[in-house]
Length: 343
Image (cartoon, rainbow, N blue to C red):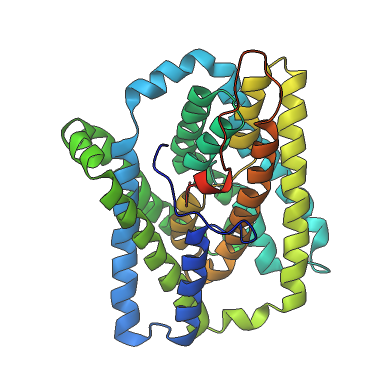
C-alpha cells in the first residue's frame, strides 16, 4: 500500500490504467486482429488469463486468510453484498430493457453484478478513511477467492445460454483457465512466494499487460463480428445512468445496513468499500472465458463502473478522513494519489 501511483491533476481524477484500457480499445477498433493474427492473439490471451490466476493464487496468503476468519461476521456481510445484493439489483435492472438498455448491455450489467470485490482499492480507500484495514484486506481476499467459483456458478444460473453461450464447454474452460492455475499457485506459493515479493513491481506490469491483451483480443473479435454496431451513444448514456443508481444503492445499503447490524465505524468503512465495488482485474479474464465473441460488450459496463466507483469512493474516503476522532490524526494526504490501478 505504500507504493504510490503517478498523481494526476485534481481536475482529472481518472485512473491512469483506465486511460490505457481506453487506448487499447481504440487500437482494437482501428487495427483489430484478423485471421492468423487473431488466432495468435487468442492463444496469447488464454495463456495470459491462466498466468493471471496462477499469480492470484500464489499471492494469496493462507495465513492471513485464516487469521481473518476471526471476524467472520464482517466477511460474511461483504460476501452477501457482493454475491447476493448486487445480483438482486442486477436482476431488478431488467425493467430497463429494452427502453434504456439493450439485451446485450443488460447481460454485461448483470455480469458486472456477479464478479468479486476489489482488493487493493478497497484497502487503500479504507486506509484513507481510517477504517479497519486488516478487515478490508481479508474481505477483499475472501471475495476474490470465492469469486473464482461463485461468479461462474451465478453466471450459469442467472445468465444461462443467453448470456454469451455459457455451457458445459464454458465450465471446462473455467476450470482449466481459472481454477486449476489458481490452485497451482496456492500449492507452489511456498516456493515462489519469495520471488513474487521480490519482483512485485515487475509482476504488477505483467498483470496489467495481460489484462490489456485480454481486452484487445475481446474487442478485436467484437469489431470483426460487428458487435459495436449494436450500441448507440444514447444507450451508453442510459447505461451510465443505471450504473450510477446501482453504485449509489450499494454504497447506501452497505453503510446503513452495516450500522443496523451493529458494526462500529471502522468496520462499516471496510464493509462499504469492499461491499460496493467490483474487480476489473478479475472480471475481464472471466468475461473472456464466459462470453467469447460477446466479451467486448459484456465487459463495457464493468469498465465504466470501475472508473465510476474509483471517483466516487475517492470523494467519500477523503471526506471520511476528516471525521473527528478523539486522539487520532487523519491519515489521508491525497485520496486520488493513493488509488491503485486495479482490483
